[in-house]
Structure formats: structure tokens, C-alpha cells
Image (cartoon, rainbow, N blue to C red; front, side, top):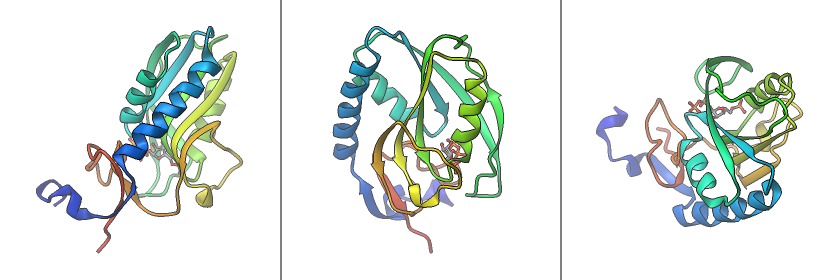
Length: 181
Ligand code: PRP
């Protein structure tokens, strides 16, 4: 069982180290601070995977912002997203006329963010952009690209820094490849 093992033993290799994440998130924070200076941005964390990225990115940004949270679950079997998303918790902020930055951990098929951006656009924000830590473009099933991306990664099953396997491993400080046996 996942909870009884040393988490590091279940990782076949480290794909993005803690230091690399830290450096890249700092860089992204600087870029986004310039982009959103004076715009009173709403940063939206998509729970649960984005939790660490969101927290680190927000603290790497120096502009005025509000933070909000959305909890979604995607109807799919196992690792495959169906693209049909159930909103378990919506943002509390009225985003009409606001600059909104969605913060996600990973874009895979793109179906989740495709659905979410359509939904949020209906509320007529002043702008709506996506910051994603990891992007797997080889898996894309729709026409969507993150506006800001931390790392483009190959098609491997990754976990850590918010990403899970069966609910576990989110607290690993790096992004690793799951050892599948
Ligand atoms: C992950 C991730 C995205 C989605 C990306 O969420 O956070 O929301 O999958 O996949 P897609 O591009 O194929 O749609 P997950 O369903 O694992 O939930 P979690 O964030 O709670 O771990």
C-alpha cells in the first residue's frame, strides 16, 4: 500500500528537482508580476494538484492580488480525463471584469482546462489566462495551450509537488516518475 512505503522508493527517477522547480517558479513569478502589475489579478487555484505551485507562485509575485480556489472532479476512469468536469467548489469572487489567472499543476489531454476556461469565460472576465507548472503536449486532445508554462515534460506518469497517485505522494518536494511494477 502506498501509505506504508518510503515514497522515494516508488519513484524511478526525478524529472524536475526541488531546486529546478524553485528557480523556475521564481522566474515565472517575476514575469507574472510585470504582466499583472496594477491589474488587481485574481489567482485561481485548481485543487488539489496545484496547491504547492499556487502557493509558491503567489509568493513569488509582487503585485496586488486576490486568491481564490476551485475544486473540480473530472469524470473519467483512472488516469484518463473525460473532459466532463463537476464543480465541487466554485470561486467565491465575482470575476466579471476582473483579470483572472488560473493556476494548474499539469495540462495533459487539456480537456479539463478546455472545459474550465469555457465556463469561466461565460462570466466575462477582463482577461483569462492559464499558468501551468507542467505541460505534456504529446497528450493533447484539444486545441489549448497554457499561457505560462513551467516545464514541458514527456509522456510519463509523474507525481509529487502536488501531483498524486491514488491520493498519495502530493507532498514529495520534487516531480518524479512513478515506478510502475
Ligand atoms: C489533474 C490536473 C488537471 C487535470 C489535467 O487533475 O490537476 O486538473 O488532471 O488533465 P487533462 O489535461 O487530461 O484534463 P486530477 O483530476 O488528477 O485532480 P487533482 O488535481 O485533485 O489531483
